[in-house]
Image 1: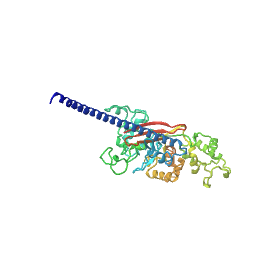
Image 2: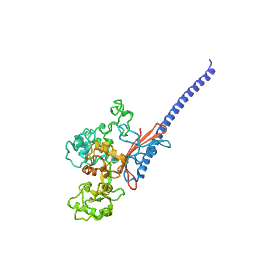
Image 3: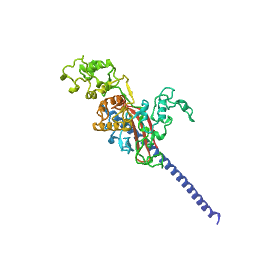
Image 4: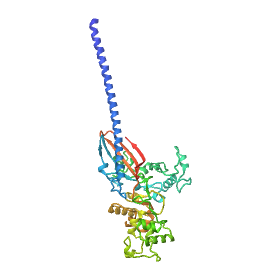
Length: 446
């Protein structure tokens, strides 16, 4: 073959090599573009998931703020509203706001959770803490030492030296817990005790929480959700010392007879009888009002003109049980503006009701049955209707309970329509007269 015939062949080979190289470059470029596009789509979906979760938070807050009922129950729209909070479709995906109903086999509830349905770590007594499942004396002592402001250890407790001597030392708070997850820093508190089987704290029995030892967390695969302390404790709950209309309550140990009459519409003889009884001995409990009787020196007057109806046996009793139910929300024994840690008997699960003084599992079940029959208590005085709660037992727990909620937990899930990305926002929101206030905010987007 002469040189002239070899040149076209060489050119052809070069062209083929050039085409092959360009094809490789084009293929690589296309692959890179597809990868970048896939990454961009994932980031887009993550962003969509975030804003869908944020939309769920805003909708739940709107339901909370729109509620004007004087008492807060699990029948309120903020607590149970699937039409507004379950799989709500928006551009790009859906959002849901599930709520833990505290059943052993969880049911689907959609709404916000009431933080007053839980035991407040910052004010709970030793006896209340010990009623939590799996609680021990050493852990209870360590919790109290963590939150108190002194350096003297409680019985079985531990102070700052223990934490300073750890391999990774940190300071003891010596003040109120700021979040419930801070409890994990306290000596003896493990993730197993804190979360139980509900590792993601969503109140749902997820597959990995019911598979034995196949995956985290450890569980017994019994088809039931064993919750840890996270589900039952809080650091945010409080009640305002006002009545359902927002008026400052009357202090029964300092109010005058005219205040009792004008504010509560009590008859003059009834108001004077309360003041006279108080002069002999201050009231220790609001329930002590049920023991007051008209003094012989105070004229009764014509019973037919009384504002409140009383039976013949009660005609000399200023405050009867039925009157007490109506008036107790207007009464107080303290001038404190905020009452921290009161438990809402309308929303608390059995496990929390059982932490109340003098309340066992039988009485807690009776409280739930009565509140269900009444569609919620309108005042704490109606606890006297509960089987097993006497006047003396009510006196023991009256300063621990409320029928209203001020702070709520919202857990909102946003799911992109593609199914490739989702986001969860957990937040604590305080309901105020003018606007909501966010106390805690945690985002996650797996």
